[in-house]
Structure formats: C-alpha cells, structure tokens
Image 1 (cartoon, rainbow, N blue to C red):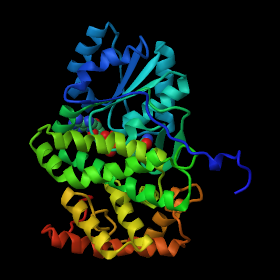
Image 2 (tube, rainbow, N blue to C red):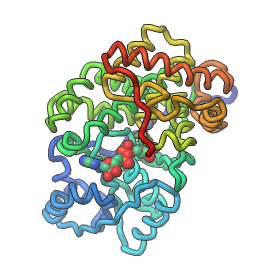
Image 3 (cartoon, protein in one colour):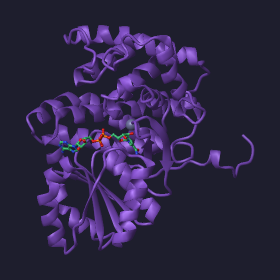
Length: 385
Ligand SMILES: NC(=O)c1ccc[n+]([C@@H]2O[C@H](COP(=O)([O-])OP(=O)(O)OC[C@H]3O[C@@H](n4cnc5c(N)ncnc54)[C@H](O)[C@@H]3O)[C@@H](O)[C@H]2O)c1
Ligand SMILES: [Zn+2]
C-alpha cells in the first residue's frame, strides 16, 4: 500500500468532548455550557423553543449566563449557516448551541465553524446520530442532499434530555433506530473493505465495535422503548435506545465509516417523492438496499425487514413514494447515490449502477412480505395532496 507514513494506514477515532444524557438533562445546560463560553447563542426553531424556553431560561439564570435565542429557519443550507454565523459575530457570542433535531444541530456546527466559536449539541429528539459528529449534512433550499461538510473537531458538549425525547412523537425515535441500525451494516462493510471512516482514517476496533453495540442494544430494546415512548415514559429501555441512537451510532458511523445505506439515503433526497420521510426512514430503505446488494443471507434480510417494519420504519418503495417509480426516476436516485464522493464506494465489492437499481427495486417485495409476516398489511403511499 505504499508509504507507511501515508494517511490511509492510520487508524482514527473521533468523539465529542463530553456526552450528558438523562431525564431533565436540559436543566443542566447552563452550567455545562458555562465551561465553554459566557455569551452563548441558542439556535432553535419555534417548536423547540416553545417546548424548552422555560427550562433553558431557568438553567441559564442559575448559571449566570445571558440567554439569546436565534430562530432556526428549518433547512440546513449553506446560506442559513452563514446567516447564523453573522448573528454570532454581530452579537459577540462565544459559543453556539444547536437545540432540537439534526437540522438545527448541523446548522449550529456550521455557524460555529464559520465564526470560530465552539459548538454544543442539545438534542430534543433521538431521531439521528447528528449530535455527536464532526460533520454537517448540507442541503439545497429544496431539501436535496448537497454535500457533507467536515470540521476539525466534534461538538464540545452533547446534551440529550430523555424526558423531552419521550414526550416527542414516537416516529422520531423510530427514525433514530433506522439511522442507528444502518451503522453496523455500514461499519462492517467498511471494515471488510479496509476502507476509510468519516474522519479520514481506517476504523479502529472501538469504532466498529461501538457500531455493533448500537445494533445489539436496538434488537434487544427498540420495541419496548418505542412502546414506552408511545406513553411518554422514560424507562431503562428508552435510555438504552437513546444512547444507541445518539452516542453509539454517532461514534460508530463517524469512526466506523459509512457505505451504501447512507449513500442510498442521499440518493433518495434527489427526488421530491421522498421528502416526507425523516432521515432515518430513508436510511432504512438504504440499509435494505445494501443488504440486497451484498447478497446477505435471506434469513438475515427478512429478519431485518420484519424488525424494522415492526419498529415503524418504511421497508418498501411504496412507503417512500416510489412504488410506481419508473426506471428513469430510480436512475436519478442511483446517480446521486453513486456520485464519486459517495460512501457507497466503501463497499468491499464491485458493482454497477444497474446493480444498485435492481437492489432498490427488490426492496419492495422483501418489504411487503416482511410487513405481511408482522401483520402490518399493505404498505401505503404517502398522501401528497
Ligand atoms: N451531521 C451528522 O452527522 C448527521 C447524522 C444524521 C443525520 N443528520 C441530518 O439530520 C437531519 C435530520 O434530523 P431530524 O430527523 O432530527 O429532523 P429535524 O432536525 O428536522 O427535526 C425534526 C423536527 O422535530 C421537531 N422537534 C424537535 N424536538 C422536538 C420535540 N421534543 N417534540 C416535538 N417536536 C420536536 C423540530 O421542530 C423539527 O421540526 C438531516 O438534515 C440529516 O441529514 C446529520
Ligand atoms: Zn444517518
């Protein structure tokens, strides 16, 4: 492999500075943030602000910190990050907190990087593994994947309040399970290919193993956790699943690496039909596609499809709005998924775009049979009315 001093032979593991999770964790935000700055800016959309303003206000008052909210526009574009960076500069803020889901958190990272201040993730849903990573996913105004943006550091601090997670719609936690289950499917492919993780190195044993731990926890605890969250309860299963979705999946994807599942997700964002789906929901279609591309054992593919259908994730193209998609439409998905910079090229085998399209197409039958076994009936197409 050439020179021993070249980057590709180095193993790299990345992590946030500190991770704090639990019921009522948001009430500690002020004292935790005070370690990183004295003039924080809190980026949140109106929904999240409404849910958290009282707790955050009390927490900042107790810590002696001034509280300034900035309204997040909702789409994590380059322009939105630049706008927030200007607010940070104008206000003399020295730390930025992304409060909410993955989009607000990703925008806070970008704005923090643009303006040279540390960034903090305060997650109010466990819908993605965005809170811990040193990258943002950048979208166009219309919601299509544009690029990954990498930073030289992870969030200084991650805070996840499991009571808020339990009170949020259950669909968010289910989406997080979809995002997190992909992590092991992708990390093992990257390991097998001796390919690169998301921080430009070979995966460490730790990175790959944490991806596997996330998977094991989810198979054990996702269904009881979802049942608990349906009733706004925080149980040990909920705590375990929130950790699997957020910390373990985050460390696992970033340091273990991504492969086809996320590339297919990115491809799916290229067609408007899929925009009703959450990140983790599209990722689940990607996980099934990757398993089919790999020729994984039928028993494994079927078990995965049935489990994720029970979790409440889409397992068919129909649910993704692509049940009747023609080849040209799927080829747009495939073209975006197989772009040269995409992580699909981390797979440990050669494939053609046609292989990807056929695997994607094959998801429909696998997913329909899985739904039938789970007693879930016919999949329904989204209502685009
Ligand atoms: N940077 C990374 O490493 C990484 C990893 C995975 C996903 N992502 C990105 O994350 C984004 C998806 O994040 P998401 O799925 O969290 O979506 P999202 O950020 O749009 O948040 C979901 C919605 O939930 C609402 N919300 C938040 N907390 C709530 C609560 N407690 N109760 C009720 N509603 C609440 C918000 O107002 C928002 O409308 C995508 O842009 C994806 O690409 C990034
Ligand atoms: Zn993801």
